Image (tube, rainbow, N blue to C red; front, side):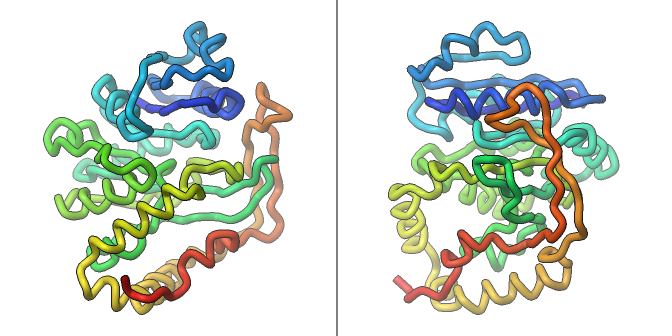
Length: 287
């Protein structure tokens, strides 16, 4: 199966180079990497159109999700995913994803696991995926977009694109739509991607906070009032599936100090808790 990866880009040249390298060195899989750059003026245009590893489209868009949708419409692979500039794939990730789809022919979406690192590439935490329960659709999505992969039929038969009315939380709303459509999902229990906590991630900015509050106001009353118990239910489920524990391991990534060669990082005491974001899940008053 051919895999199409879409990367939305705007003024992220140094991180984009690492992202491109992590896709280009994937082995044992046919792929295309579509980069949708919104006319960046940070030097991206000096190298991106000349890079033979990507299909570069430099054109204005209305935001990240518009860029992803444009790339999705251009994608020719049987499997589609999107990877942001500050994210990378781990070695062998895409081959494992193709094998997961081959073993699960009825699956529309494969959810894999993610490593969170800091701007220097040092480990922060593991994030293991679960197939989301509809009951949690309004409260918590137990996966990151860097490790979501879906068949082309999700685009062609279900017409499921990202809602461009959102600028920061459209991925969570996409997953909710996928659940509403009852798309079949399965988990690949393997780390396939890296998310870099750069300090400038979009989901840390004021607009993301405003959109989260806006989506909270859209929630049915039961979801607002029972948000905290539902979160605890998720945590119990995560604990039962051993999502918070991991044995020592080594991962390999590109870094700002090593943009052309992967470097290995050993993690002696992994954790599944993202302490920097943990406060976001604390109880809140219903809106």
